[in-house]
Length: 292
Image (cartoon, one colour):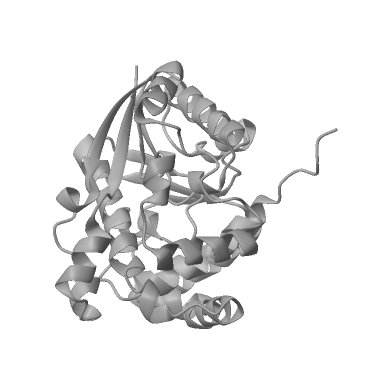
């Protein structure tokens, strides 16, 4: 007999931790998000319970900055003007990018987080007097539910190609959930006549283990909060990963996040040592999966 269905809402608590680290960067609206969501308190509560040293975890700031910015870079390089983001959290990448009227963007996530983010976006639009071009959309959708994703892309044009992005999601999934996600993404891209899936979330088990002891402790703490094992969806090898891409009808290319993001403002903001900064930058890959 199978156990109870996983509570994916528990993953959403990590959105405030991401917001905490991104406030040290020049990512649009990152400081507003951190203040609005109470990211500082959420972070302090998190490390206090697990006895973590915040100084040991500061390298996450450039890591999360690079992840965000490399996705923006690759969206723009794709030349595709409409985007669906899965499990978007509080990134507000859609709000930032749709200041260009030529880009249509749907940010999707679970209900409770999406309601909070909708209020935040309203405040930011008012504070900065941002013009609403009607090209930025917020949707409630679980990335594992195909019907919810199909509804989320309702405002977009199925006569044009689509970019689908997600970051910091698959590492909380099981292998079977990873397969469900890939199937949903591939089906959506088919509906739109093609496009690309951009994500930094794939890795092998060797990659998952090749991190500092401090980051291992942080991941263990996250496992406790989210009640999800970290990197169950990691592949046994790069060959297995490539076979997975092929099985779901993707042609894959891997890029270096730092090459896509040469300037990381958080390094200077936090006064990180060159050694720490370089260690944080190493091994940061991102995949561009084209529907074939």
